[in-house]
Image: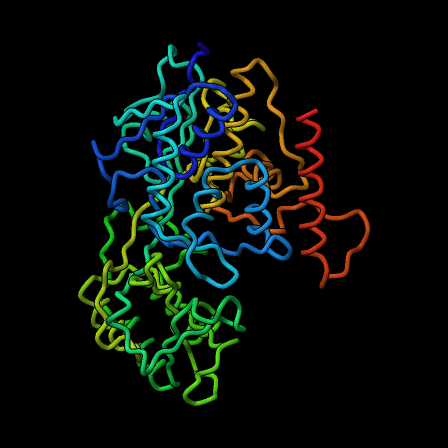
Amino acid sequence: MKTPVHVIGGGLAGSEAAWQLARAGVPVVLHEMRPVQGTDAHHTDGLAELVCSNSFRSDDPNASAVGVLHEEMRRLGSLILGCGDAARVPAGSALAVDRDDFSARVTAAIEAEPLIEIRRERVDGLPPPEWGQTIIATGPLTAAPLAEAIRAQTGEDALAFFDAIAPIVHRESIDMETAWFQSRYDKGDGKDYINCPMDEAQYGAFIDALLTGEKTVFKEWEANTPYFEGCMPIEVMAERGAQTLRFGPMKPVGLTNPRTGKKAYAVVQLRQDNASATLWNMVGFQTKLRHAEQVRIFRSIPGLENAEFARLGGLHRNTFIKSPVLLDESLRLKSDPRIRFAGQITGCEGYIESAAVGLMAGRFAAADALGNAPDLPPRTTALGALLAHITGEAVAETYQPMNVNFGLFPPFDARVPKKSRKAAYAERALADLDQWIAAKAS
């Protein structure tokens, strides 16, 4: 028997890393602290639990960087994408999932894999030498003892940012005499989103309520913790200007109220959150409002006057390491190469990005375990672009969580017209990935 690789953390990154190791024939010990210890954001002990949105964002591999990342991971046998596809719910051109079904599928697959041993325990320090290769994929909610051990080992303070959770509404409590089904620009089957319209006066009153509503009071140590721009609380966006939300999550473009035949001044969208369509989450409505204030203010939205909430919004503190200076090109800790990091703790942002880094860490660790050199994905792929950003191309002094985007891809040697640039990036990425896969197989 080969020496097992230890993976700490059973979220999306840890589950994907363990799966990739097992697929390569390498035994794995997967450590997950839930239910021994919970977190501020998790509600179950299932692997790969989704704690914020249920969306993996755009699934378009021709015009979206995250869509390209989806497709690359599918071609590499990703567990997370496979389970995501199986647990899919309608969401237009996005890949959204029934979060309970998704977690159950990931958990069942990991439990059924004979090369993976799951240990339900909290790891309170860096792995002992006898563990050998270890992947730390504890995510942004890393338990304090392990976070302190990482900080002591690296000599670098862990950075931190706030991440917010959007409320979820029971479908039967939404007034469909006011709201209507429609995706922006009619993408999908037309029933992927519920839209609640606002006129100018209603929008103005809503903004005032957000600005004056009672918010969570932060502790002193949290005062200077920044927000991640891609998960900004709705009231913080409102503080940036009265019109900010109309150009963000409440933009009315691509939607027409069938009762009036006109575009609303602003629109609140809800996206299906489970397969039975009984739960719908408020898109872009992450918040730090107190729970009673959320109920009061959100029930002022037309169509949600009698809304019943399955979950209210919340805010939690996330941590990540300064990866560009701490990790080598294959995600190993420079000061202790037996340790790799994967997932959001590296500073990538987003479910799929987290799983993608887990996929790469698992494959790199498998190569090491089998006596081979890690084979990095081409720089022109979404995987390669994300890896390069995390492991050295980002500016360390200003390093912040980053979603995959075409700005991370290397430019073309020749000029490509702007209107066809995204498609060109996507085509090059998938062609280069296929060539890389074929070369590895030969």
